[in-house]
Image (cartoon, rainbow, N blue to C red; front, side):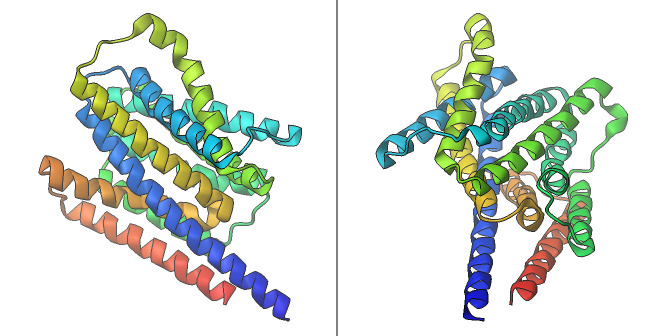
Length: 297
């Protein structure tokens, strides 16, 4: 009986850690988006390169300092390869959507990633999804729609579909992060491999199509990369502590952070629909927390 209680305490502690870490990642990614916007007219592929370059250096430094070898069991190679490939796809598609769609449209497509993460966790990791969990995800996703108010009537079909692919890629990548964590692969190793792979993947384009930048733009993009590294480490750790179906809902908190930054930095005042969206996101997140707390009690 005591062992069961201890196991429940560990599960509850891991869930709480995962929740805090994914909210922290949402904050970091919101800061990254602000930096990307402030960087101005720089090609999206070049922005993604700086984003992953800083993350690679940051992760490499942690590996060296902590004496963690970059070794992955052969059984984990397929999951790591999928994390790298689809993670890179998600970043490139999301940045392309931001450059070719309304910001609101691109934002809602990017926020499809937690929704896809829950679905992939069900199909690939065989993690069950209860009706209540599914309902909370749907309510949060509906709140996201109220916030960004996408207007697909004026959006080009191809960029919109590429944005959907971005959410798809990110959702699958985060599911693989969860699987790698379950297989014992260290978070810094996952981040390092993904970041290096992404830099190599876009390296040829950067080599032949590099766009000169000002010192200010370079500094802003480096800061964006630092924020991305913080977000990447946080979300990687989050999904190693808890399954996507339990914590991915909290990734929607990025909308709240984005609204606050928009008001403070760009004088953007949310309308009543946005406030309704915030309420739905917070309500669903709180309901999910109470649900899992009661089950683990």
